[in-house]
Image (cartoon, rainbow, N blue to C red; front, side, top):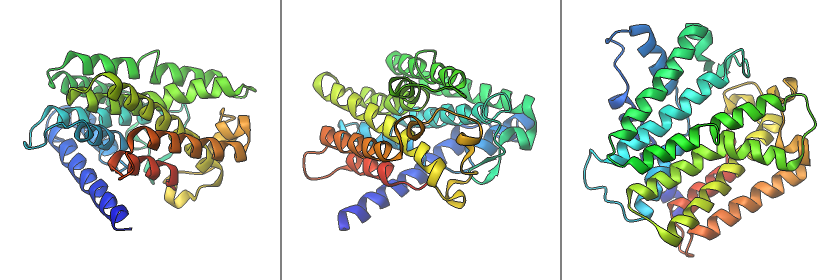
Length: 293
């Protein structure tokens, strides 16, 4: 139990670090164009688990990366990953996509600032993120993020998700969507942490598999929570996927298999990174498996 308390405390400390990095690297509202900067900050600083930057930092430390300075390349990478994630949420919530009114218990960006500003806020966060990633000084991590976000990653997954609405699809197809739309950025976060710590070879390959498994598990659990989750914990209305005829993992394989597959993926991920003594990466995997929001 003491280990669990310690890991949770570390996770919470890292969330505080992420918040401070986002405050540091986001454009100030006082700078023009003020409304755009306000919309960017509104969406990024609205809360959240900060899972992707925490995964990057945890992997970086797992691979022996130094943390002795308050201004490191990993810090810019962490902020960049959260900005990309937020940009994807802003665009995902738009009327032309999922048409959601609430995000983290607050009006979505387009409801607060209008559709045009929301689109531009997402675009601007995308740009700032790549600027920050370039400032790490490692071309490979910029390429890693681009691949995770592009047509073979998050954007490609979003296209497949839109095309699957109202259709009966196979298990292979839903896995394809989830691995790209959600899983690619989670896997990328792990890989970027390892790359900045100069990890390679078998260790890097195992970490990549870990990232892929927890990424897919995360979205399966997200689909389960949309059916069974508490809206007050989710920060959004439950059941929206069904109303919009979205393709979901439980909808394809059934709820029982969805739960079993999520648990199996979490166990397999932990086996890839845990030497038996426990560590932050295994704790994060368990956190994903047990989350309620």
